[in-house]
Picture 1 (spheres, rainbow, N blue to C red):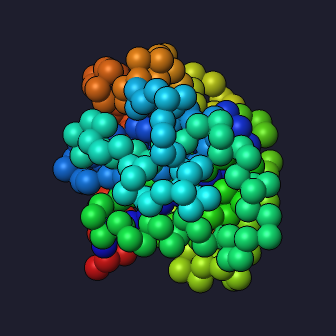
Picture 2: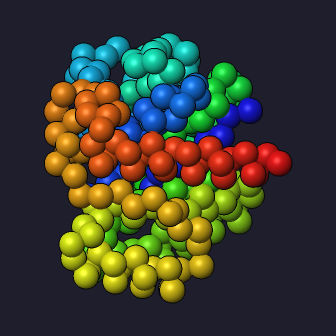
Amino acid sequence: MGRIIAIANQKGGVGKTTTSINLSACLAEKGKKVLVIDTDPQGNTTSGYGIDKNNLDNTIYELVLGECSIRDCIIKNVIDNVSVLPSNVNLAAAEIELIGIDKKEYILKNEVDYIKEEYDFIIIDCPPSLNMLTINSMTTADSVLVPIQCEYYALEGLSQLIHTVNLVKERLNPELEMEGVVFTMYDSRTNLSMQVVENVKENLHQKVYETLIPRNIRLAEAPSYGIPINKYDAKSAGAEAYMNLADEIIESNNQDKG
């Protein structure tokens, strides 16, 4: 039974896509079979895995509109143990095309139900807004992982996101939980980063992962080569951090099963 984790934060630029790509790749390196679902019309997770997002016949857009099956869309073994359900800019129109469609909040869930047994983890990269695609991701997911950038406005918008998670849990997906918070772009040289971490821990009654994802030039470079950090520079601080986060996620999943 695969665990489905939506990576969400309606604030852009917090490391959501970086986390989706690199966490999934590090889980795969640890022998887990992973599917990555890109629900962001920008398609950055898709291109971050080296897929030419503009030359695809079947993407999540065609899937959501019922023009193909989920198996038609999945690109298998992009790297060892990682398959990708890709996205591109066409997806931006899906919101409008779904107006009036019955039970549109469950379109993705109904498709993922067919294949979820085949993976250990399914990682969903959500768009940086609280729209129908994010709601679909949350009705599909078991839990929501929230990347938070270590900066002054880190907590802004977070209460809104938690409110959304609670609403989805109440009305659409009673099984949904908060997976927890992971800090990104941490700079150990600044007091601000440390203060943000302390502030969030004090004010937020959520699980906070021990792993801090550092500001790391190699992490920023890897997507332009279309490969995750553990394949680009396995010895970099960024790769080590995501390997540690993968360990924490696996351990947390094992505890939940136990």
